[in-house]
Image 1 (cartoon, rainbow, N blue to C red):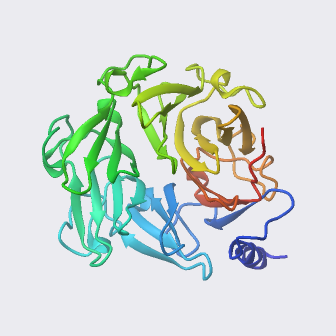
Image 2: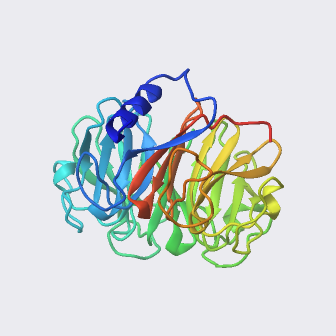
Length: 360
C-alpha cells in the first residue's frame, strides 16, 4: 500500500465514529517531515481543535497562520494569517492579517475563533459570520495591567493557551505574568483568575487567586467545569475545582524527567508539559521535552504513555509506542477515542485511532 492509499484508508476510518482498529494505530494526517506550506505540508504545528464544522483547525506556527484541514477531502485552507510575521489586519479579512507566533486556538459557543499570539502579546478574534479579524485582549505591548477594564486595553505577556469555560469566560494562560487571566465574553471585562505573579511552588489545596503559578503553559476544561493546568517550569499538572476555586496537585513531582508510567501520576516525572486535552474522564498530556503523549486516568490517578518512545525522532508508524515524536505541543481528543497530535518539530499532525480509555 502506498502513502496515498494508506491515507485514504485512514480517512475512511476517521469518517466513522463507530469503527476503530482493534489495536491503537498512528498515521500522519498532514506533513512530510520537512517544513512547508501546502495541502500536504505544515511548519511546526502547535495547538489544534476540531471545529463546529468537524474540520481540524490548527496553529501552523512558523507559517504564521491558522489553517484547517477537511478530514474527508484532505484539503487545507487558511483561516487567518497572511504568512508574514507581524501585527496588522484588524478590521479586515483574517486571512490578510499578520500574526506573530500563534500558539493555540479555541471556539466559543457562537463559533467565533480566538487565537493566542505569543509574540504580539494579544488574543485575536475571527468573527464567525464576517471572517473579520480583531484584537480581543491585549494591547500589543508586553506588561501586566488592565484588570477590571476592557480586555483590549489590558496588557498580557506572552499568552500561550486559551480555553472557554461553561460560564462564558475566556481563560488565558498569561505565562509571562505567571497568572491566568479571564475575560467575560458578554462584556469584555478582564480580571485575574489565578496566580500572584510569583515563580514559587504551588501549595496543594490553596486558593488559586493566592497561589503562585510557575509558568502556566496550557489549560483545558472538562464538561463539568473542572479546570486542568500544566505548569511548564513547574513540571506539574493541577486541577482547579470550579466550586471552591482551589488548586490541587494532580501529576508531576516538579522534578524534570521521564518516569512513573503505570503508577500514580503525582509521583511521575514530566519534562515541560505544553499541551492538554480532556476526553471521557482521561487527561492527555503533551509531555513535550520527553517527546511523548501521556494519559492520566482521572478516576484512579494512573499515568501511562500512549504515543512516543521517549526518544526524539520521526516515526515509524503505525505502532504508537514505537513512533518517535519531536517536541509535540498540541493535543486534542474526542469522545470516540481519536487523538490528534501536533508533532511540532517533525512537521506533522498525527492521528491515533483506538486509544480507548481503560480503567487504569
